[in-house]
Image 1 (cartoon, rainbow, N blue to C red):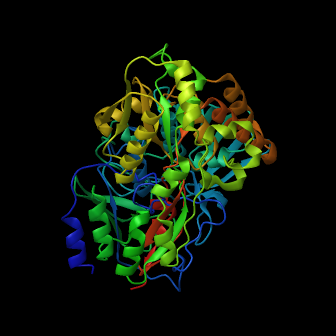
Image 2: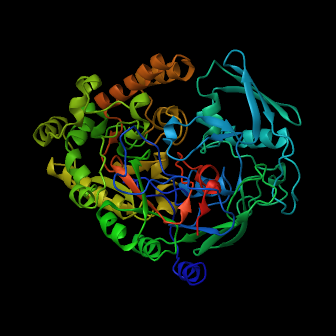
Image 3: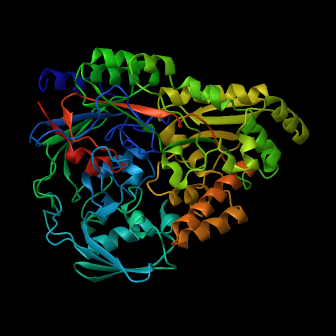
Length: 572
């Protein structure tokens, strides 16, 4: 298997990109790490991905990505491909402490580069670095120790005004290197999420100061993470070897990790069925067949923490567009048959036939994966009157569109080569729903790298767009992304009520009170439908794992290569 199987996998890659299909939870290392969710997600009748026996060392983890990372610089792009790659090579101050069979959103932040983080008031923090942590032994860094200056340099990159993540750390008033192993953080106010912010795999990846002129971080990656980039063949594969001087001497258990670039879903599944890949995200319709073809396959199914949603061109792009009127936006939401969309992506009967229980919940502007802690169920009584805008009411939607009025065709924009086959199916279904209420849409399918991520993703477009959100490990990240001051506020939505609620939740140390602020943000968006949550990503995603893989664990967002893959081992 390690010989012929590896050769087979290495020959089938070609160009593309590496975001997961938002309709399902993805396996660690294949884009976004498998997401945790609310209690009840299950893989009844299948083996549970968990540890088994004493870990064995050796072997190579084999996974895939659907395309090249747009850049190797973790601060050079907001892409999933770049952030997923970063988790192999770079470390953070804190990470999510995963464990087998522990829901990822129940897991808490724990130390990574940091040895400790302490505060007396929730506003002023002292972070101590682990002693003796080494960068990869690659020129020009050559395995030197990580210092506070490296952290401070990296912080300046994540917080720079031109950074796409600056808005997420705007509440950090001051960061200083006290000495080689100590940093001080002063926040603008007490924060309930300091540790989770530093553990957020969208944000602070620690780079050596040499990356500022000593080498080009867009083309060369040198970090202190569990994996060293050994080879990168564009449109073919990325090969990593275990970091021999990793601070956790027990990890990684495997000698290396190969990430093959396989754009086509059919090839991904064929390689997994043949045993050439250790994991794959499997479409609902294909789970029964894969279950039959690969004896002993281990399944995990949980709600996704990715979001798919409809959004509208900003006011500065089209000040007189009909969607400036909330009635139009509500009509778009009520045009969607979310139950039908859920049926499009669950294969309930087929799953039940092989002993697997499908799990479906509706996303709000906060994903269902956050469970009862933060998510507000659009079908629940506590949502209030704005829940009506989630209902499928095409006749009422048609009346609202007629009352607002439209002039001519409206561009309908989405990308064709990033989020997988199922994303395209949902995009087409949404087009039909909106057409059925009287909208005349002109479809514009954009290339991801040259158009979507550089323009439409940032709100530089006209018309209606269908997109997917990066998954955030901390709930406030979604609010900041959709409504904050950063350039990645896709619709440039700045609603005073949501802004006020956002500012309150940022500093609320009492969790029940903070939860109510988060719930009210969801109610307000549902009332105004600034962003229209679609159902495409809310069903449980099915991830298959090779029978020989052990110590399987889930994490959230992009930290899988550190928080999950480094713990995997082969019982074969």
